[in-house]
Length: 122
Image (cartoon, rainbow, N blue to C red; front, side, top):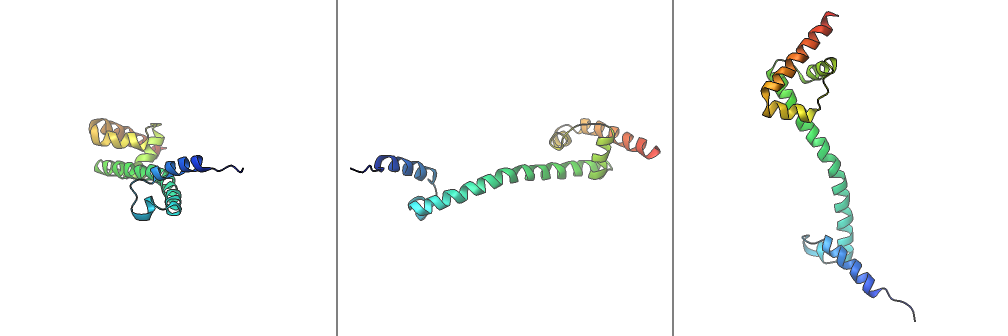
């Protein structure tokens, strides 16, 4: 007698259908549609996990730029000054600092301006 995959296949299908819960129409009822939808969902999830990092970095740069411009520097000048002053703060930290602790950000800006002046003199 040949072996059948009945119970194992049903278990596997149940797992897949469970992942498709919440999708509408055939996308959570029809086997082929469910498989295609889950593949596509996985691709979107993979892509957008990377996209999220990009979007956050963009947001931090916009915030740092706005805060630096309020203090008389452009973003590119500010970052260049940070490098000259050997200050290793990332953009996320600078963004949080600009929002939550403006006095600390002001002190960073004064160090940056001093470093830029020092570089101009050379």
